[in-house]
Image (tube, rainbow, N blue to C red; front, side, top):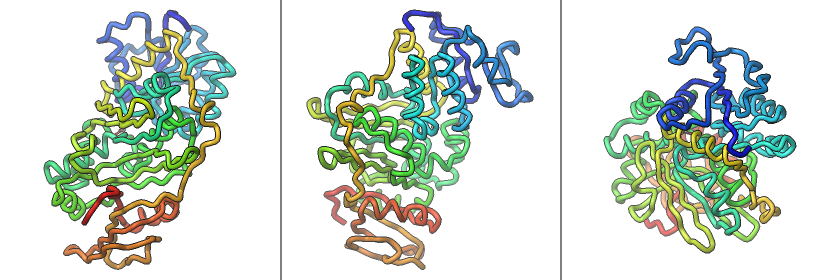
Length: 401
Ligand code: HSE
C-alpha cells in the first residue's frame, strides 16, 4: 500500500476505539476515513452517526472497499478471528490487542506474508511510546542486550498513588479504572499478565524470540501492602512492576515480569502514574530510555494513528532479529535476589529458596524473607504464590539490607 486512501473498518468503540476517532478527527489526517464500525451492544448509546454502526463483523470483512481493519476490542479470541480473516481477505490489520498477538504471533505472521499485507501494533505495547517501530526499524540490525521497563499504566498508577499519597491498593485501583487505564478485567494489569504480553511483543523485535505466554514467569502487585511500601520508602527506593528481557549468554535470554525495588539512580524511579518507560541496552548505542503515557484514550489513539500513517507509506515490520538470532532460547537458571512477604502461617520452606539471608516476623503478622531463588523455581511456584497471598519483588544485585 503506497499513498492509497485508507478505508477503515473499526472493531470496538470503547476507550481506545473512541480515542482513535477523536485523534483522527483532531489531527486532520485526511487520507483515511472510517467506513464502518462494528460494536457488540446495540442498546448502548454511541456518539457516532448511526449509519456507520454495524453489529455484524461480516459487514466489514465482506466489504471490498475496506482495505484496513483496526481492532480495538478486548476479547482475544474474537480479535484473533477478525485479524486472521481480515488478512486472509487481503486487508491490512492494525490491532491493539496484545494478549491476542502474544498468543498467536507466528500464525498471524504466516497470514500476513501469505496475503502480502501489513500487521501493525504500536498501540499494543506502551501506549504512546513509539517503541515497536523504533526497535524493529532503528534497532533491526544492532544487537540488543536487554530490554526492560514499566509497560503497564494501571499498575504504575496504583503504585504511584500508594507511594505518593498513601492510598490503599483497592482505592488506587478504582481510580485507575475510573480513568480508563485498566483492562476490562483489571487482574491482567495487576497480576503482571498485560506487561508479559507486551514484553513478548517487544522481545520478538529486539531479540528475535517469540516466547509463548506460558513460558514466562509473571508476578504482579495484587498482594502488595503497606509493609512493602514502607520497606522501599525507608531506603529511599520505590517499587515498580518491571518486565525484563536480559541476554544471559550469547544464545540465552532470561525473560520475566515481577515487581522490583528501584533506587533514585534508576530511570524508572521518576516514572509515575500511567506513564510507561522503556530501557533498551544495545551493543553500540548503549542505554536508551523512552518515557511517555502508556494508557488512556488519546495516548493509545496516537499510536493507532501513527500505525495508519506508517501503513499508508507501505510499512511492514521486518523482524530482522528473527533471522539474526534464530537459535536463542530461554534461560530459567538465572538466580534472582528477592524480597518475599508471606502470611505468617507460611515459612521459608514454602518457597524454593537457594539461600535465605534474612527472615523476620512483622507487626502485622506476616513474614518477610530476603534471599535468592532461581527464575525457573519461582516460575513453577508462582501460581501458588498468587493463591497464598505472597508478595515478591526483585532486589537490585547490589542491595544491602
Ligand atoms: N491496561 C493497560 C495499561 C492499557 O494499564 O497499561 C494499555 O495497554
